Every structure is written in structure tokens, then in C-alpha cells.
Image (cartoon, rainbow, N blue to C red; front, side, top):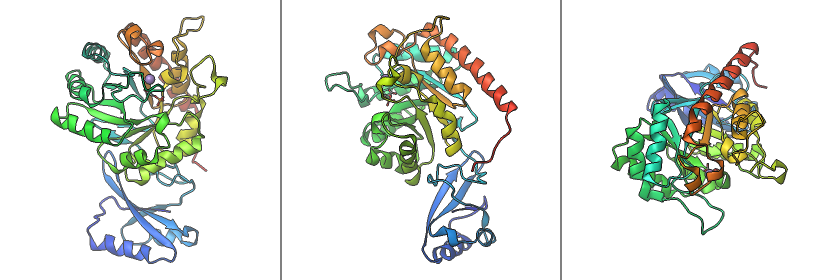
Length: 372
Ligand code: PEP
Ligand code: MN
């Protein structure tokens, strides 16, 4: 059960202390306080854990300081979309709003290689009014002999260039909790010219210690990828790990499932789960068509299969697209075969706009349903 306090609730007030004490005193109930920082206001929520079935919702709603009560109807207590749950969802980060309504495209380099490539990429994004990108500095690689990314060494110049070209958010994978500190320090050192969304990759979806570290810090939002060989439910529990540690600024990403039945694509595209994640949780949903499809093959009409996968995700309500581009894919150190070229950027963005309009028209046809 979630007890949502009135918006002006002060955690240092006598009223708050009395309420918490009253809830704590119920038999077999423990409490956990969460702060939800929204666009207009910060909401305080008290999670009641334990034997909540015996509690009287109306009675708790009548306690001083309580705005309303939501009964938890899903296992995912914090990220879940519960019955009669009208809590605001999503978050703002560095001037960009992320929620289940918005759509943001993050085109960029799978892996940072040269300064010239980063600058060419970012210049192209500015020319097309794109304020978000992806830049990999720490790369999890199958072979220990493959390029592992430039790591902390490239961060200052990547952040400076991002600031120069008006990039507000960079999705950047971390594979160890130390990377959070390195990113924080490099941002401070360069005067915070941009923002970073910490990406937890598919190989680390169930790295619980990494999840806890990313969940304990409140500075950076987290892009959590679905595990490539686990169920959706297991991956959503991983997202709940982040939230339960205190950071609910999460975007959940689908990136395809590892199975040979996905051949000839790199992974079996799982974007039909976009509406499922939107239904089960209040998280914005990202799709990664590049790591799903993994090739530059085209249909006979001339569209890239990566574009088709992108369209499938957007037409079903995706809120973010993480997509690999490279100024010169032939020399890319990681994932060149799936990178789109800068010449393909305008067409890609136009295609996204067409499909997004189709999604908007589809939703106008539909009647909103409350979750069950
Ligand atoms: C990536 O986005 O660069 C990446 C490695 O993705 P994934 O974790 O989905 O394989
Ligand atoms: Mn990659």
C-alpha cells in the first residue's frame, strides 16, 4: 500500500512524525519513505510493507497529512502501475522531460573512438535539432582482446564537445560502480556542460550490486536494458532494484533477445513488449533497434531493417530510441556493421516523425483503460 502525502508535506513536521509513528504502530507493518521529485512538486510517499490486506484504505486516507492511498496491485511496488494509480510518472533531467508521453531520439556512437568522429557526430545532431546522444566510453566486449572503450580518459573532451553542440543528455553505459564517480568527477571538472543518463547494459541487468549503486545515487537517471536471456518480469524486477534503493528516474529499454530464432538479425526483436512495459509500469520505454537488428540490411523498398524495427517500437508507444550512427562505419571500433551514416540521419528522423504521428493518431482512436 502506498500512502501519498499532501503536496506540501514537510518531513520535519510534527504532523509527519505523528503519521509515520501511527502507521509504524500497526501490527505486522513496516514503513519506507520515498520522495518523488516531479515537474511541479516533490511528493512524499510512505510505502507500507507487510500485512496490508488488513488495513482499511478509507481510514488511512482520513489521517492528517494524507492525500490518498494506492493499493499495490503489482509486484513492482515502486515502478508498477497500480489500480487507480494516478500518480504522476516520469522525470525531468537537464531540461528534458522523460515519461510515457514523450519521445526522444538518442543517435550517437556505440563507442567513442576519435575526437574528430565525436565532433562530426555531435555537429550533425545540432544541425538536426537533436539534443540527446549515445556515447560509449566503457564497453563490455565478448573478447578480452577487443577494444574496451577509452574509459575515463575520454570523458572530459566528450563532455566538453557535448556542451559545445548543445547536447543535454548522453546515454553512457557503465559496467562498474566506479564509473559513476568517474563520470561525476569529469562533469564537475568540465563545469557540467551536459548531462549523463547511466546505461546498464543487457549483460548487467542482473548485476545486483551495480543496480544498487546506480539506485543509491540520485544525480543521474538510469537507462536499464532488458536482459537478453531472461524474462521480462525478471528484468522489471531489476528496475525495481534501482527504484527500491531510492532512484526511480528510470527508463526501461528493450534491445532484443538472444536466440538463433532471431536469425538473420543479431537478436530477436522484442518491441511488441513496448505496450506491455507501458501497462505494467509507469516507466518511459526505450527501444534499441541497432543492437536488436544488428545489420544494415534493407527491405526491397529500400528502408533499413533497423528503420523498420524503430517504426515497430514507435508505432507501439516507445518513448526513447537509442540508435547507433557513425561518421565512418568502416573504421568504427565497435559495432560498425550496424551503424547508420550521417547522410542517413535526416531520413531516419523523418521516418521517426511519420511513425510518431501514426502513434498519436492511433491513440486518439483509443479509449484509455485503467489498469487491472
Ligand atoms: C550498447 O548499447 O552499446 C550495448 C552494449 O547494448 P546492449 O547492452 O543492449 O548489448
Ligand atoms: Mn554496441
